Image 1 (cartoon, rainbow, N blue to C red):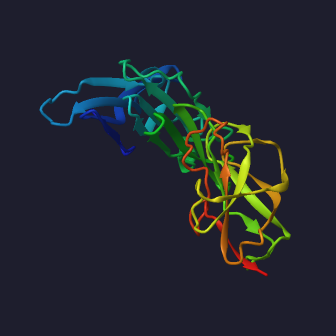
Image 2: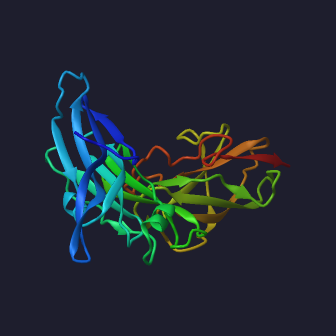
Image 3: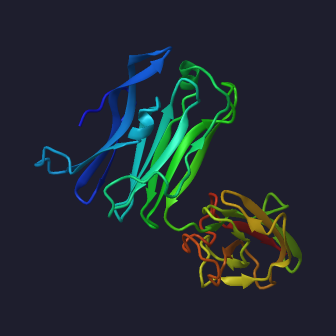
Length: 315
């Protein structure tokens, strides 16, 4: 297995085997002005798997990925591997040639298939616009990465990209999911009230604002939200349900992945509560929405993004 060039290696370990991905060099004979120029060096991505005991000197598999595109003058590098619990492999990489900006490529190899399939889960995308020289393209270099989610067997590929072809434009991280269920995942954010000191009277309506975020990867209808009063900062079944009256959302009832909306409602502190109390919520309390996780639907803690709000009750 021969890997050369400065374009990094990536490795993952699963079932006592290590899989390594890296650039593999070769000479490309380009036809220019009526003759072949054989001095152009190109790289493909080579993937090989080895035994972690190192008792086997040759790899179990040794595959040259994107070999066909390599011979069409693309130069591949910066591979990123991820593996899930089933042993499926996801491979992200970046390719470039003289007339294009860097492009993100994605491949997957299932545990029961010996070769990578470039057509599963994620269509390769091109970021940047126009044409330029290879030097300019490398100046706008886009890194690739990969990660897996053991709880869902999902795998993610990501790339750092610029919003346009100019070097002064903003950089963004683009994430694409390759395997695993595509589901929403609602989490409550810290509630807020108009009084910054948290002072609230008894038996009078108080306006509360409850941000809800979808940290999953599927668009979904906004869930039912239930309010609670608690003597501690963790909302659970032992706490006191409290009515959220005049409740309304501040936007579309469909919540996109990575976005949040705020539920505005009124609550009233009962007269039998005369000291400090926590207010928090439970999102989708009856588990009507299938989510990536049902364990993060409650307000929890006295500070941080999911925390409950402490209220000072005044007579």
